[in-house]
Amino acid sequence: MTATGPSLRELIAAPHPDYAPLPPAAPSEPGVIELRGVPYAEVESSRPLELDLWLPGAPRTAPLPLVLFVHGGAWRRGRRDDMGMRTRQWSPRPFARIAAAGLAVACVDYRLSGEVTFPAPLDDLRAALRWLTLRSAELGIDTSRTVVWGESAGGHLASLLALTHADPPLAGAVVWYGPSDLTTARGSFTPEDAATPEALMLGTAPAAAPERARAASPLTRIHADAPPFLLVHGDEDTMVDCSHSQALASALEKAGSPVELWTVQGADHGWHGLPDDQVEELFTRSLAFAHRLAA
Image (cartoon, rainbow, N blue to C red; front, top):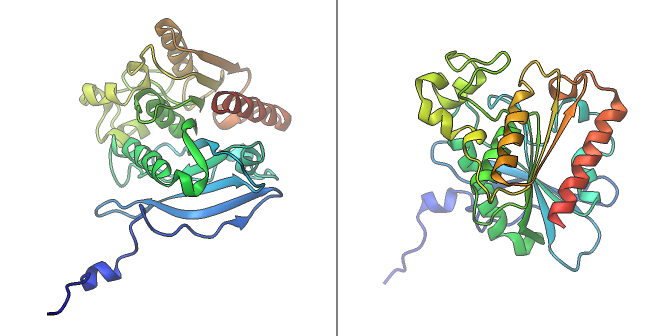
């Protein structure tokens, strides 16, 4: 009797991310190694979702805390290994600097608004955390000590993840100039406009779907057990009004959750208008905050 084996379709398909071999680690900046393009999820009728990992190159005796980085790009574009226009020419690169400080860094893909609508990008971040937890022993990381760090649209998703993810709960969040409220007119944003990046992310004008807009607003997801937040925002931001971070900080304080708000004078979105040394200082201080929470 002939034994039944895998079908040809199953043999052709790439191994599932849950058990696929990890790619070889490659040297990066001095003292840092990288694993690039690691699949973490298969989504029906969609591209594979991948992440990049930066790890300290030195031998380790204990699992590393994790920074989960979420890129910006108005939910419409962006690259997972891009921390924003002011860091693109840095050497060492920002993620290598985080790894050199003793933290693992995972920079994740998520589906964009040309592909899906909310809550799919948030679901993708949850899937990344699930995969990182599943493979944590091989990677040498401890996802119970995860700080999520996002900029712009990535800061919005990072805030939502920190406020809603419970298994495991996050250790904290670093949010650079992220939207927090899709229900109220702030700066140039109006919830009635169906052409804004926020509307494209939701699939309709926020005012036309108020419950969905509330669910996608970190400001409405505050609770007393929220992890510590660091909110950093320019007071001259013309793309995401500074009141987003001010309102979120106020609500977290009122709920009794730890929060720090740094309002950066003279800074537009993406730290446009700041001298290089001040951008470096903001990064260094943000990294110190993440290190303190994850350690």
